[in-house]
Amino acid sequence: MPVVPAQPFDYSFPEGRLALVVIDMQRDFVEPGGFGESLGNDVTRLQAIVPALQRLVTACREAGVPVIHTRECHRADLSDLPPAKRDRGDPALRIGDPGPMGRILVAGEPGAEIVPALAPLPGEAVIDKPGKGAFYATAFADALEAANASHLLMTGVTTEVCVQTTMREANDRGYECLLVEDCTESYFPEFKAATLEMVRAQGAIVGWTATSDQVIEVLSP
Ligand code: TIU
Image 1: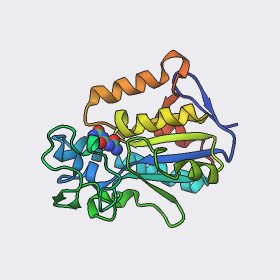
Image 2: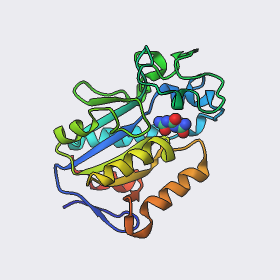
Image 3: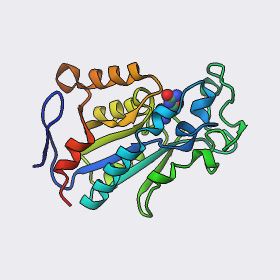
Image 4: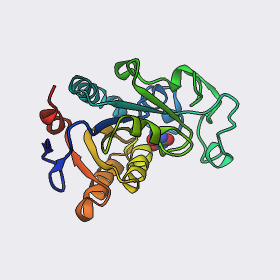
């Protein structure tokens, strides 16, 4: 079995059972004018992981590791957007409002698309999700089953919101998850650092962490 030198200890996975999960690498989170910036965040932090994630995605494709993408977005009629989500806080633009990249976090709008550098290939699963976690009200579980996955590489944004929520949900469902340190980012560096520490604490209570170099090293083409 391939072994990644990870924290808090080595991470191994059976050949053919690994999948790469890329969470919400959408223009709305990564580019100016979208949802992330409307919440008052500096989106340049998130842009910085695109090259490393692009390298990992390419390595996975070359190694035959299935790539599964998610997008946080809502139906045009917002029927899947509870008031508890729409009305939270005091953002400059609310979900569904028109912005420079179309309606904020609405499926089919330019802002909801995945950034071009990480565009899904034909045949790769793309899961639209109304929540922060990828399992709620989606076919994500079916996509993991179709990929025959038991072990998941977790990447994307933001570390402590959609990535961590999905990683915890996957852990509870029996998946062995590794969070790729330089392929995830938060608007808050201290939240990213805390998330990395908390998932691997207590003997990998939620999972492992490692760098993309450490992962790519063991992926055989
Ligand atoms: N994808 C995701 O993490 N959604 C968020 O709303 N994240 C924030 O950090 N706001």
